Image (cartoon, helix red, strand yellow):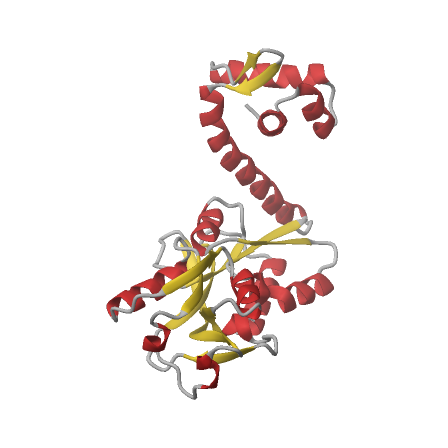
Length: 289
């Protein structure tokens, strides 16, 4: 089993068509068939099976795809890191964040300094970003407060308060001080339940026996703010997301919510610290605040 065979398997598992997969891999169909056959022989299983004129993954193929994806990404990262010892700089750095708005200035500074290195920025929930760092699919992550994980190095970047972004047409927009109790029975636009910040807010509301009137649950802060901008309801979010809000909304600190949201930078403890990674981490610490 080698990296070419794994790559061929993964592409074929996406396309489920030898012609299209071979075209993506820039090899002939017979070569692709040989690689898949060799991989199946080394594993002593059948990875694909025919269904009429089509092919599908076998049960073994479905299981193998999960491991193969991790193996493939790890091999690519190792190959990339070995360039350092050959006198070359790495070609790509993968950066993950739970809020990509935090990284705009970092992206510009890094690409100005290292124009030949591709900086890939992906946005995921904190749990997924952490897992991708552990799986070597992401080099550096910027996530919301997390418990200590033995294989990861974590560094606090800053803390921010929870705030309410309130449509100007709402009666609470003119109130000088806002408290959690003010949101009882008010229309709220919140993040989905499986996201970290939503869990924090839910716990606080439950502790105070406040029953929220949630009219909409969305997957990211930007969508929540768009609904607030359209005057649908009050958005509960954090300071970094509301540095620029439309004239149709006002931002109020929640007086009796002392809880602060922590933003941390994470990386694998054994990660190779070359010039590019060190520059990027320094820029994140300098800029993300």
